[in-house]
Length: 202
Image 1 (cartoon, helix red, strand yellow):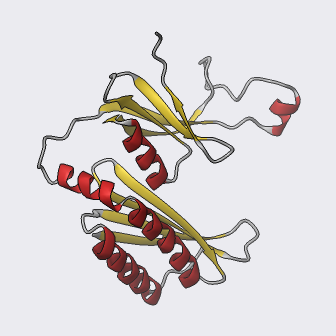
Image 2 (image 1 turned 90 degrees about the horizontal axis):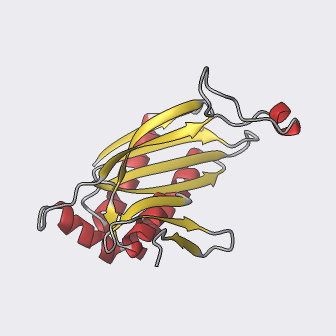
Image 3 (image 1 turned 180 degrees about the horizontal axis):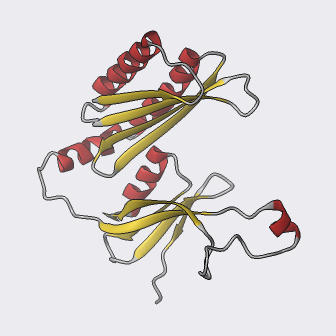
């Protein structure tokens, strides 16, 4: 597994990088030895008192998981984030092994549809107070796009979609329902339950 360690205004020396690589390597070998790569980033919290560690791990084609930890030093922050990743691996080990066999070529993988993921400009305080439209792109009747990345809409069961949403630690996931071929959305509700949007009409 290829592991990248970086810091945002945080020094990441050889000792910390070795600790991260050894820790993630142990977790991957124990729970999911098909992991491909991991990006580990350290930063300070908003108040600048504690360290925060973000782990983004690619476990296979379009299978991602995320963990975040906080601690008084970078090592403790990493250990908390790594435990979050390990818990997700333990919880979904059986399903993830199914994905691993799928990715290893036991059956032909279904190609996802290409899509774009965009981040729109946030309204300024002045715009909110004036109840104005969000910042507009020059000459376009749409909010300004501040970031754009390629994405994939995969054919999944609802259970697989929920699993991927949880593993990636994201609040919402769009997918094409394997049973109906319709675009569906699963999302994390405020009460902790999972919402499922299926636009089919009877």
